[in-house]
Amino acid sequence: MFEQKTAKVSNWKYLMGCVRGLRKRIVLSSMKKRLLLSFLCVLPLCLFNGWPRRFQALKAANLITFDDGNSGRNVTILLWYWPFRKAYSLRGDVCWDLYRIPRCRLVDQRSLFPSADVVVFHNVELAMRQQKLPLNLSRPQGQRWAWMSLEAPVHNGNLLQYANIFNMTITYRRDADIPIPYGELLPKEAEGHLVEEVPLNKSFLVCWVVSNFRSHHRRSKVYKELKATVPVTVYGRWTKRALRSNALLPTISRCYFYLAMENTATKDYVTEKLWRNAFQGGAVPVVLGPPLDDYKAVAPPNSFIHVDEFASVKDLGKYLQELAEDKKRYDEYFTWKHQWNVKLYTDWRQRLCKICTQYNSLPQEKVYSNLEAWVNANNS
Ligand SMILES: *[C@@H]1O[C@H](CO)[C@@H](O)[C@H](O)[C@H]1NC(C)=O
Ligand SMILES: *[C@@H]1O[C@H](CO)[C@@H](O)[C@H](O)[C@H]1NC(C)=O
Ligand SMILES: *[C@@H]1O[C@H](CO)[C@@H](O)[C@H](O)[C@H]1NC(C)=O
Ligand SMILES: *[C@@H]1O[C@H](CO)[C@@H](O)[C@H](O)[C@H]1NC(C)=O
Image 1 (cartoon, rainbow, N blue to C red):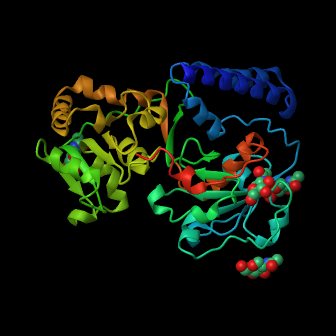
Image 2: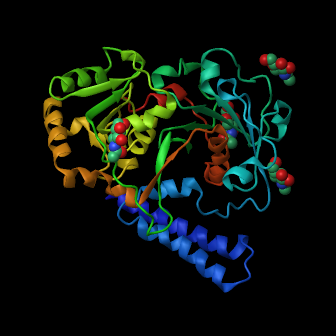
């Protein structure tokens, strides 16, 4: 109920945003363009009736450029150092050139600190003590410091020292100030797209790619129990059957099911194991990680199978076997492809440019008084 309501409110806001955009921002001369834009504004509302939460994704994808109320002002995002020391080019107007995000100045020169609206710190380097926060610099009025991480909480190190420092969070969690998921589904823009055939050349029932096998992981127990019921084909460093990156998806496409099991079970932690390996590989994902509801929020019904939907792993095995033998029911696990495209996110520039699309909706004043507690909230 509650969700329905919030979805309606945000739909409404969205529509208003569109209308404002039509009125103010876009220089339009012809009626035709106007009609097209109105159509583009309304279309997603219809599409989203059945699955309102996906609305957020559309907004995030910036399919439609909002009037952000900046009236010509650039928002300056300063990346204090590059994640994993791998720098990307920031030449030109990157956010516009690559992602069609306007008025977003993405820089990495520390000398620009005084003019930065947001300064971003990637946690890995802080945790490894390769980088330090510039606590000796005085922050200009209104400047926000952002904590950015794609790691699960256990890998973030001790965050107690970062109380009362950061104003915003950038992470895969849906409730982050700037959510940066590993991937998401975006609505197909037009009807009548050719839907990829369900890959039919299947030789294996269940496949798993694992490099980091730890017997205490819950996924390892699930694997062992499942293997006792149905055949499971395992690739990856653990079994010395590592796959080259160009062999990964073709290999997975030969499997009916793919074990998209995360190494950590924590809120919203859904990685490329789902988005790339299973969805792009063309195998039905059997997921384990965050609770069922977290998956339901980001993937449509009948697109995945959660281990927790079964009373036992043995039951799960039986279900998979039956499904593989029933072509019609199996194919239903691919009907989502009529409406959705898989989008993977791998470029830090895209994540950083996204800050600008949400900059004006950030709370005026916000401080994470206990970042450690926020990061570890709702851990299962
Ligand atoms: C905004 O930033 C872009 C990219 O750095 C730059 O090309 C443009 O001239 C800037 N515009 C203003 C109004 O400062
Ligand atoms: C702040 O500290 C850094 C070293 O952590 C130093 O390089 C920099 O010059 C200092 N800046 C000021 C204004 O004190
Ligand atoms: C099915 O896969 C096998 C093994 O990769 C390959 O040799 C065969 O040509 C494929 N068949 C079709 C119809 O694609
Ligand atoms: C950012 O956090 C600092 C606390 O370190 C606070 O003084 C400042 O007002 C906050 N700024 C915003 C825009 O929330």
